[in-house]
Length: 315
Ligand SMILES: O=C(O)[C@@H](CO)OP(=O)(O)O
Image (tube, rainbow, N blue to C red; front, side):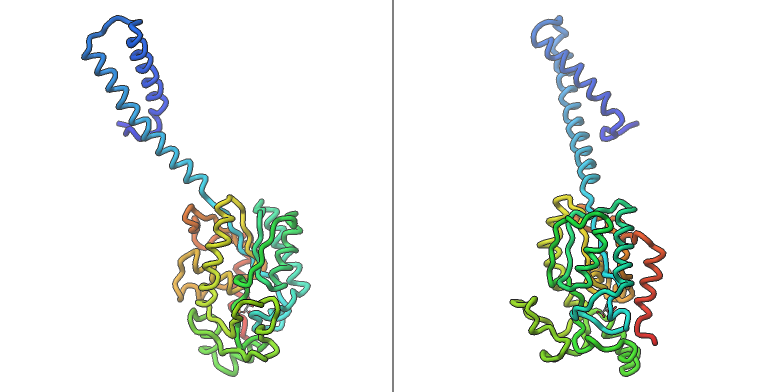
């Protein structure tokens, strides 16, 4: 037996309700003979019951239609290889350029967007040229260079404190594997603070006028700064139905992945984001991933790229 919420008898019900309505209407106009008041009452109440069922079915289908429509597209894109990725130096907020290889990676990322039909309507970047240029190069190839751009320091790379500018392999050798991994991938332990007058400090950088420039950050601090920005600036664009691209950095994107996928501190420690391979998330109406961890537009290259990032620091 079908339940009344089963959509199959839907058209039958509509036809029945319509027929009954006509009968009641004609009877009201006294165009059909008196059937006896009991039958009349029966017909009318049956009609009302069907109306209520009809209402339920309609609101259920409305909910289903709403669910289907309420999915949002988000693309995360880490910048291409930077000069200091190439020389294996901790970078953080130091504004190093892309290498030629990094520029080529960014263009390939754009080609993937184009080939897979993932076309951003708005792009968010950090204030650092490796993310800004990666966004531009990839969007140019995808023929979306014209879309609006929003830049914000809250999408910057994690501030690597006193490690900024230092060679990863040397730091690993000097301080040992445990400390190296603690500084690099632990959730709550920041690296040592940078001196405000250090050549790689951003304390006096005019682009950060008005904000308290960090002297070091753990991933937890990045989550703290990215989350309110996600809520105040990015979610409203998704809500408007925009396909949003965030072109940012290994650790600011890890913060977003942690937040989206609800990963534990241990789980996020194992996540490494490859350079310039778009990571597509489809989000539900609570802005949670429909498919956990999203989908890289080139999964094989992404796996190889992530493994290379994880291996940094080895000689
Ligand atoms: O140096 C950095 O700023 C980041 C990203 O390149 O390095 P890591 O992957 O070690 O966090």
